[in-house]
Length: 105
Image (cartoon, rainbow, N blue to C red; front, side, top):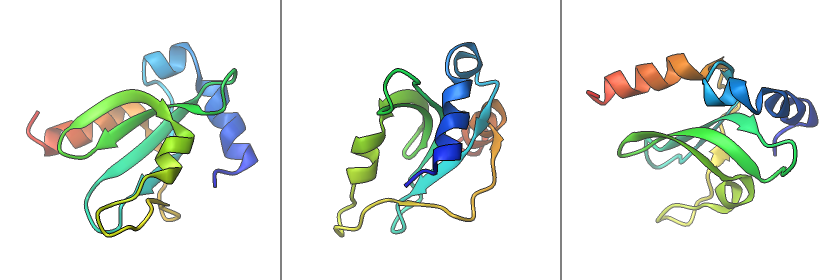
């Protein structure tokens, strides 16, 4: 579960900063059995369920998604995705660039 402080920080990014990816990815969810990851860099202050995130899976994509749906997501082994407690914040635009380059995009 994302802390109240982190949720408030993510809400403060919403709007122009999220649109320009000029903010930080504060939370990372991972699937322990694959390389799939979701990096959250924004939370809609009017809807605590809407997040802006970078998904690193088969491809790298930026999208708006449901936090509740993300937290209910599970893999083929039946394991839920978990928050990566070792993740250290990184600027969203830099992370997207780095992940895209790694995938050869």
